[in-house]
Amino acid sequence: MPDQSPPSRAFVLGLADADGHLDANALFELGAAVGLTQTTIRLAVRRLADSELVVTEGRGRQATISLTPAGLAQRAPDLGWTALAYRHDRHAVPWARQWHLVSFSIPESARAGRDALRDYLIELIGAPLAGGLYVSHFDWEPWVRAAAAHYDVASHVTTAPTYSLNIGGERDPRVIAAHLWRLTEMHDAVEAFLTRWDGTIRDAQTDLGDAARAVFAMSNEFEQMIRRDPLLPPELAPQGWRGAEVRSVYRDTIEALAVSHPIIAKANVFSAYLTAIASAETMDDSTFNDWFWNETKPKPT
Image 1 (cartoon, one colour):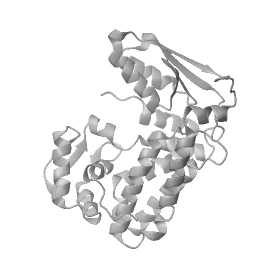
Image 2 (cartoon, rainbow, N blue to C red):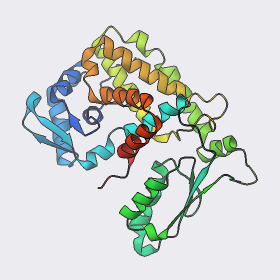
Image 3 (cartoon, one colour):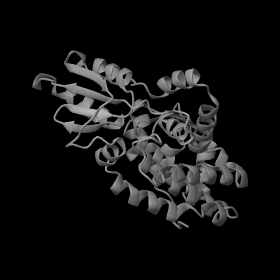
Image 4 (cartoon, helix red, strand yellow):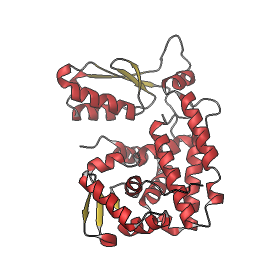
């Protein structure tokens, strides 16, 4: 069980809901539970405001605190992507056996747009194949086109789906996926997460401070993993891949701790997460696709 308070900056950002709003009262109450003083929290909020990551009105527990677009970009990953992973775990999103290629040749005069698009493709579950050539198992064309238009490089971008991908003579989709997203390296992180956190429900249900410190530390580690996770559908996941167990342990833990400690349930980082996952798992395909697009589409900066 962690015995240290979470970093105050990450703690404040972590309480923001999907729209970037923070419950100031829960911020101070949970802060006290994890060992952060009111002075520490106020200082963290002030520094975030100075960095233009949050805007505030009022003071103390009556304050209105909201993340700016820059602040939203630094909080937890979009809930839509996490929801997609849970749908994969339920085999609700079968892979169409298509790979999706994006190629671009963008001149130096548009270097900023080129670099931004390259970074976005990696965030969008893409893997580089060669200079200016990326691939994903995810049907990303609407996202890629929207981003290319936003960065004013659309005329230099080509997209193409293919049912056949051969990398160095290898055609097996599972082997290709393991190579593209370095799953051997991520396997070690998955195993470490499960070893560290699988007993959290049992060990942290009594003391609020222990529970809050554990769940925020766990959340931080989970967020780092989900950013690296290629969110492979079962058809591409290697034999014995335990990514679904990570998501199951995390979900079960915050559900149990929210019941044992209602103040934890008030933390938007957890309540918004559980609401999004529960909703996504019960949506039909058409409703989910619309919701998913609205959650994850490129947003103006």
